[in-house]
Image 1 (cartoon, helix red, strand yellow):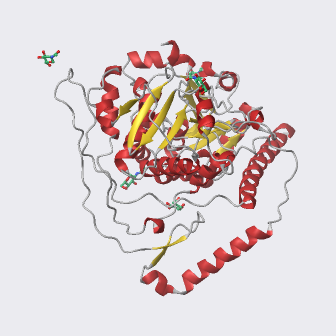
Image 2: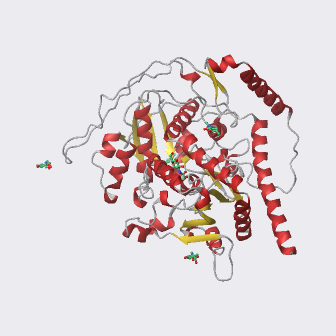
Image 3: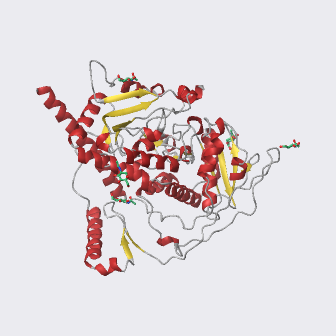
Length: 527
Ligand SMILES: *[C@@H]1O[C@H](CO)[C@@H](O)[C@H](O)[C@H]1NC(C)=O
Ligand SMILES: *[C@@H]1O[C@H](CO)[C@@H](O)[C@H](O)[C@H]1NC(C)=O
Ligand SMILES: *[C@@H]1O[C@H](CO)[C@@H](O)[C@H](O)[C@H]1NC(C)=O
Ligand SMILES: *[C@@H]1O[C@H](CO)[C@@H](O)[C@H](O)[C@H]1NC(C)=O
Ligand SMILES: *[C@@H]1O[C@H](CO)[C@@H](O)[C@H](O)[C@H]1NC(C)=O
């Protein structure tokens, strides 16, 4: 029960800026475009003009243009062969006292509708960060020694050989984080059998990133250990991976992500933005971080109203009451929802962003695998960390006076969650990350002594505990059989200039909001 309190409670989180960009400099970055960006824009414009003028392109639908606004790419559509989707249920032994084994007849390969996977639609932009996360090993490759050194804090080592998964445990994880993380990888293997290379990864299920980049600078410094975890920050090199809650968080009754998305979608449909409470809402555990305690000072009282409505989440009490008050899908009833980091990043981020409310993100320190591609003012509203109450008051006032724009921001985040963060893409992200990682390995993976083979049957068939939710969530998130399509196409790395421009845009938006905020308070104080 102690663990529940001190670990990542759960209620708000955000990351955001790239490794290089968290400090906001007080200079005005040059607005001039770099020639390369201009050339790229010009090229894109030419393509778009061509697409619109040559209507035969569109009519024959030999090409379609996917999302001009999100600047993605013109994709040629290749013929598809229809494939019957097969379902392969778990092969469970009938009795619990019989040892559950892994089946030997799960398909080792699968056929897809796409004849040429390289012509599949390009994955969402946040996949580009895979290249950035692996960049430290781009020239050196990854040696066995580097991997072994990651055992300092690793929770487990995961080995994939010949499409089978083996796990060697080093230390106890918080709650069922390790269980559902490994479960996620096993589902990936069911989805894309035969398409994952042999590899070994070290995984740390704790919150805070560990591999400090400053320890690995200089000529004679050893290569950094590649360590997988759920979040990173600008000072560390940990490789970010989707967190366990995508497959469920049994302890606090949070269902797998695809079920939650469905619930939230239905919830969003029931209350339109305009009918929601016109305040900023937060509910969470304030005891994990001082910044959260600080946030609570902004709560409404007899003396003050910063437009914030803040509540303490007591998970233990909630558990005793059957989680009646903590249904995530019922927490989309305010126009504004605050995300603030806890001990590190917080899982709550995606649930908040999915609400179609305006997410107010208190300047984050950490990032997860998708947040780096979201833009302030486009997908969320940035809140100052050093002046939270005034910042919140302004944000809510601004939104209530710019309702159309505010709704657009809320909707942009909701659509991002629903479209770009759907489970298909979570698997594709893991698929590409692990494939790119494995390309860097300079040694042959081997099964360590003391490792056990794990498959969905061994984990799920006789799973017990946490009031049956472990098994329930596993069955709910089970991949039913091989996919009928291959993964999306991994976009190339950012050009350095494009990355710099992206980061600059983010910084500029945050600075812009700070200016508006200052103007707002200056004018109020003059009155
Ligand atoms: C791109 O943006 C449009 C409009 O905002 C949206 O409908 C579409 O789903 C987005 N596509 C992707 C891949 O983000
Ligand atoms: C296994 O369980 C069954 C009932 O579930 C019981 O009849 C049997 O005696 C058990 N066998 C052993 C070896 O425990
Ligand atoms: C970690 O790796 C080092 C170097 O290979 C080894 O000496 C040590 O025993 C390992 N520690 C654990 C906990 O496995
Ligand atoms: C909910 O969905 C229905 C059917 O799609 C639609 O007619 C209705 O306007 C939606 N309600 C809200 C509040 O979005
Ligand atoms: C914040 O204020 C509301 C309304 O008065 C109250 O219900 C709530 O308990 C307060 N939250 C905290 C953390 O004190």
